[in-house]
Amino acid sequence: MPRADGAVRVVMETGGRLTFASALDWPGWARAGRGDEAALATLRAFHSRYAPVARAAGLALPEVATFEVVERLRGTATTDFGAPDVIAASERAPLAADEVDRLVRLLEACWEVFDQAVAGAPASLRKGPRGGGRDRDTVVQHVHGAEHQATARVGLRLPVPALDDLSARTAARAALVEALRATAGAAPPPEGARTWPPRYVIRRLAWHVLDHAWEIEDKSHPVPDA
Image (tube, rainbow, N blue to C red; front, top):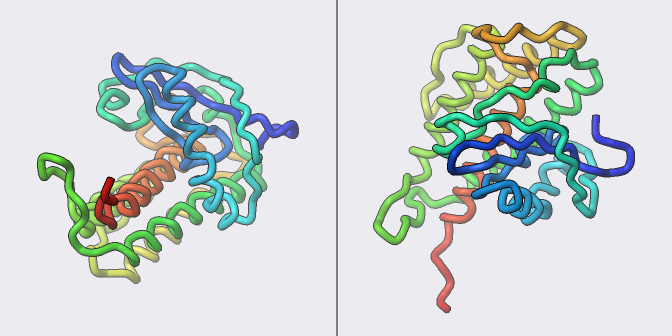
């Protein structure tokens, strides 16, 4: 649970090129930079952008983000590629039912923000200076693919929903939420297991969903004239 004094507990994952700063109690609020200071500065810069996610979950994000680094992790090639990839030791502790509920509500809020971004986006997203980048439906398919992989990480076996099958995607998310809630009080899987601890599943998935929600929002509009 968040600290009573409002300090935000942060896990730092450091690779050879990038460092990820992830707010342990606020899944989805995770940013990368070249080194600790840059990662924390970027995390702080996204405080106001993450606040609506907390509100959608019925929670209040601390107004002034004071960070407390509680764990440092050695990153991997995936870290340097641009994704958090290491399970923190603190994520291997059992979760009480109220904490599972809180984390799941934040994950659902990330989904809500993502779905709203998709609904308001044009089919063709703004490309990079060299013409690179994916369009809306390709990003959506990528995110839904990661969601499907997450269901396997909690022990579910579900078919891959089609891009246009809203009912199947909704059912898959509901099954994932049910499986996560069922972990309350249980011992997380041991290191090396195919399944992941629920706190890490939520942290990794919420980051991915929200990262692409923000990407879609940012690329839905042309660059303003200087």
